[in-house]
Image (cartoon, rainbow, N blue to C red):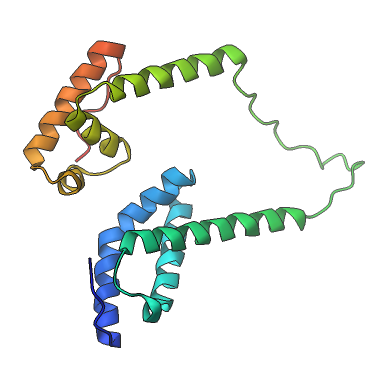
Length: 187
């Protein structure tokens, strides 16, 4: 936890440190939590840190991630609301205009059997991960959330070698149980 001592120089140092520490985590938060492409997520991360910097005078120095997550969630929801407003203000098109409907048709949604198969695969994967030993399960869940090996080691307070071996063993176990082959290295 960082304690604020005050002063603009200290604010800049604190901001720089928090930016370096949480930038990638915020990026994953937007990409996974809001299912955004990387370029949109980068924009939202920047907006989040701008808002955080602007409110540094009110920051008490604790619960850094919780505060950034709250600001980020508000930034994302504001963006979603703005997009909804933009849709309501869209250009109207005359229904008799022959060029109005030349857009390609949307891809058909998967049929019931495909949706059921995907749901079944997802459930088997979640069940298999849930049945892994605790250390392997924790490492695998963080790895699937795009944490790097060193981030997993810091988060779980274990060595980098322990992360590697737990993920290797988890991959082997998942492959033997459900035939799922995960990529080997994502360091």
